[in-house]
Structure formats: structure tokens, C-alpha cells
Image (cartoon, rainbow, N blue to C red; front, side, top):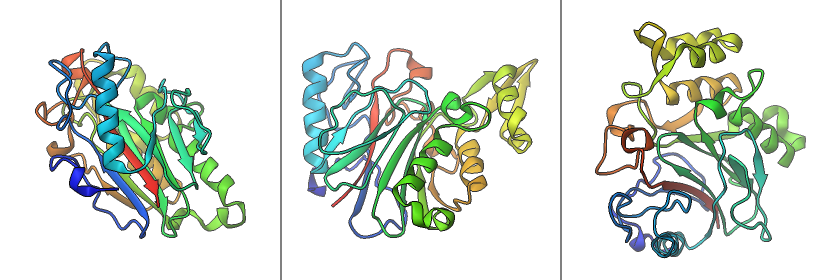
Length: 264
């Protein structure tokens, strides 16, 4: 890892991660893609020139000094355990590993990236939490499923692991820009009445939703209290910061930035 290769506009999580755990969130800056994907588009599924995406991913990997394992994200609750034989492109919306040198990586263009590790730093995880992934099925979404897989890594300590988990929420579409229909609100309220506070009505059956706030509620419900990063203010909004972040909701034709976490 050579932090001198990290673009000054990339985000470095401010959180108490243990020594040996590293994380970074790219932005639009530092790559070679042309408009409308300028510049560091890391998504290979958005009709950008393949050779530009390959160059951008090489830039990102060199900066990390670790191997970023890109997923095929489908707004599911699927979680992938990474090892040295894991190929890129497997369908999943979260990954975790206890192996050094592998970067759990999530691509973003409005959905919420969530990074997780423990105070001991013996594993790392990353989740792609759009509203569909957060809602999941029967009240269990991508964060709950990731937690279940974390517990499988440490079955002896599972009952006591939640207070040791540290979470970082990255940029996503903010609560003043993410309007959904009443059916989305109903999905959350069915299993979590407290989520009502994360929806503000704008018109008949139209609601602005606080995606990062919903994630904080879900994490807190699992006993994860050490949560850093996105506090739902304007600086974290992908939609409202076009010079810094890609946003599919804003632009429709959009690149992807990435959030990665890895161990030495």
C-alpha cells in the first residue's frame, strides 16, 4: 500500500480501526474515463470503454496494494467469503474475509456502502446497502446476513461480538434527494415501526428516505453501536455533490466509485 498514490480527493475513513486494517473510498477523481464517466469509473457494467475501466481498476489496485475483489451486485442479501481463489464478478452484495491482501470491495452510485471490522482486526467486511438490500426478506436484510456470516467466522465469541464491531458508512444518496413511493416505506414499517422516523412525506404516497439513518437503526438493533462516517448531512450525499461522486439517480448514465477494506 502506498498512500502517496491515493488521490487527495479520496475519502479515508475516520474511525478507530485497529492497526493492520485499512480502508478507502474513491471518488470521481484520479482516472482516465471520459464524459459522462469521468474520471475514475470503476464499474465495468455501465457501457464505459472497457480499456478505460481496466486502466482505472489498475490505478485503484496499485494504490491499495491489495487485490480488490469486485462483485456483481444485484441488490440481494447474498454474502461471499473471499479467499485467494475467489474470482471477480461473483453475484453477491457483501463480502468478508479473514485473509490478508484481499480487499472487500463495493461499487457505489447512490446506494450505501458499509464497512465492518472488529476491534481485534481479525476479519473485514463490506456491504452494499440500497433500500432493497437493507429491507431484505421478513425484516432480515444485507446487514443482518453479513452479521450472521461474521458470527460464523467467530462462533465461540458470537454472543459477545456485536460490541466489538466497528462500522463505517460511506457516501450515498442523501435524505433530501431520495424520494420513494409508499410501498417502500411499508416494507420497512412492516417489520420495524421505528423506521417511520426515517421517512418524511413530500406528497401523496411520496416520501424522502434517510438511507444512512435506516442502516444505523439496523446496526443498532444488532447491538453494533460503534458507527462512524455518513451522518446524513449534505457532504455525504452522492446526488448533491456531482463534482465528487457518481450518482445514477442524478445522471442516469453514471460511473461507479468504490469502497474497499482489507487487512495486512
